[in-house]
Image 1 (cartoon, rainbow, N blue to C red):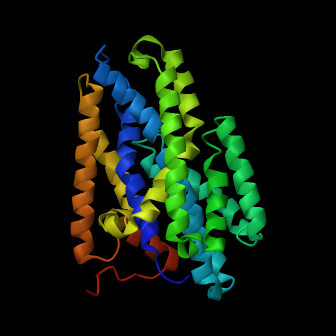
Image 2: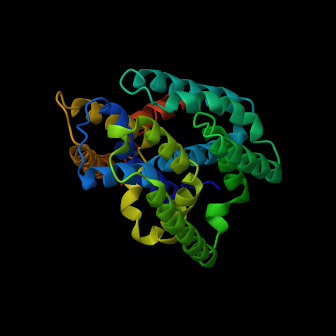
Length: 319
């Protein structure tokens, strides 16, 4: 596999479009003006059911896949591979530490640390990676250990790369996955809507909010599998997601900066927060398309590549 899979960029792009709607809950924490309006309660439940934990799980899976791709492409370097890999992780950790200054929920630092564990795992056989990844994912999900969940998902990403799943999977299988996961997602959504309070649960029952959020988190695999299946199945009409997916680090940190700059000094309703997040997605979408008309990669991606290869990489597009 010595080429870039468009579907991987599409998955990244889709996940990046959803992140601001999740991260806004942290950036605007303490500034929400909770009301008894049904719309407020519906928006809160929608974020928890459809978004919370769904996008970060996609990123974790793709990070494992990217580690496999990196090793697979650079294995001709021999021992130099480990030096370049260490440089790559060091840059991620550094960016993560800087990002944490404005967003305490940063994942780049965590990915940089977990990346150390992934390198020796690349040598493990595919069936073992798949087994360990599934068992670890189930264990972290059942125990709601969110900080541990990325690691087994990364291991699953290694297995996805070794099995060449995105290359070999047929449209027939993907269509069946869409139907099956779609059915289970509808059932999961109905179940969560049934047990959710009809009022904004953070307003009256903070403990109920935590309990419902944990119950919703435990069902993330159903929704995430549906999202992935849909992106893969309809990848031919979702090519507009590729530019934003090619600049994941730049977009990820830019979204945090925009959320910080647009953070209100007064109280804000959840509807206003959702609107703000939607505007940020549109801005990032437009900027990524414009940027890649002149450059081949994003600025922070260029920084990572340059630091990894210890040579100035050419960012100007050949088009």
